[in-house]
Structures are given as C-alpha cells and as structure tokens.
Length: 255
Ligand code: ZN
Image 1 (tube, rainbow, N blue to C red):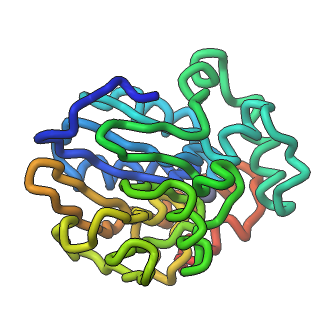
Image 2: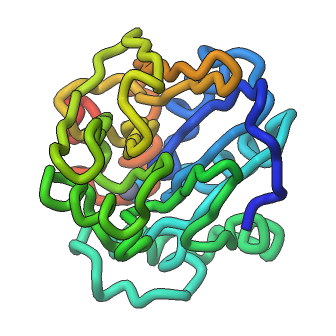
C-alpha cells in the first residue's frame, strides 16, 4: 500500500524503464521541473551502463517517491531467475549485479504493485502479472479492466507511450497513442484508464527521445513528453563497459 497520500493537488512526474540510462534520466528530471511526487513504474536498472548513477539521481528526488519493481530490477536483486531474459538482457543483468552495493539494493527493493488512494494502481507489467505481463493490446487492456474495475492503472514494460480507456464500462475499450506535448483531461476518458508513460532509457516506438509524463491531480490532466538527451554519451558508456553493442545501437533508433 502507498502512504495514503491524498491526490488532491499533486503534480507528479511519471517514469518507467529508465534502464540504467543516466543521460536520459538526467534530461527528464531537468525537463520536468519541480514535482511533488515521482511515480516510477519499474526497471530502473538493466540494459544500460549506469545503474548506480540512476539510483543516485532518483534517491535525490526532492519529493515523495512511489515506485514498483520491474523484472530487470528483481533479477538484479536475485528475486527472479535471469533465464527469463533475452541473451543481451541477461548479460546486462549479470553485469549489473556486482555493481549494486547494499544501499542500492535496499533502495531498489520495491513491491511489484502499489495502490495509492484514490484508486491509482501501479505495476510494471499489468494487474494480472505485475512483473512479466504486457499491456500491449486492446484484449490485454480489457482483461486488465475486468480485473481491476474502476480506477487508473499506471504501467510500463512495453517501452511505448499509450493510454487505454473504457468510456462505457465494459462496452468498448479504446486506445490512443500520445505524442510529445499532448495534454489530456483525464475526466474525458471515463473512470477506467490504463496509462503507460513510455520509456525514459530505452524507447521502442521509433522515437529515440526519452519519454515521460506529468500528471496534475488537481486539474486532472496528464501530459506526455519527449526530451532529447546525449545518446552518443550513453552509447559510448555501454560499449566501453563491454555490454552487448545491440544495447547501444537500439538507442539511436528508439527500437
Ligand atoms: Zn523495461
């Protein structure tokens, strides 16, 4: 459970899938400006070369931090086996494990799901499988709505910004792919919404810029944003760390 924070009048920065990309995370934190809360939807580590720096940046956040663990975080903590990962992902996790000290591990250790009143639910994957589930289709969204009912769900894991919504309870589920700068009144979407801010550190929607969202719970809007970051710096760190080159190359293309 969350801290019981009332959501009246909170400006929150929503991030997911930082994946040890401190260059992207630094750009997002600067671009977002001051926020009361930071909601992290998992996978802070994995794939990239700066896990400690990302944890350092996030633990220095000047506000309330709410976070859930993703599959890569749990693997780096030894909670799930690395056999469930593609080879490059597994290699990056094995590289990450010895770089996390006790302080980083304690900080990274988060629940797989979290509820913040009034009915904002956080997972990395989805409600049916918070760690590995993919909310990547209308069918998956319908199953999620069936499971959680009314409320707002926030997830990551697909590395793609999206909002699913059910405007007439159980009758029709729809989705919208937000672009940078798109701001929406959440009340327009009805009582059931599923929100993915996209990935900070490894976008996979063909846009290489870091993705995130800002939510204002007083005026009840959400805005998706993209921000440029020094991809070349990040690429070089991945390559000089000896991590698989594909993890550097995909950042250039946002895939
Ligand atoms: Zn991820």
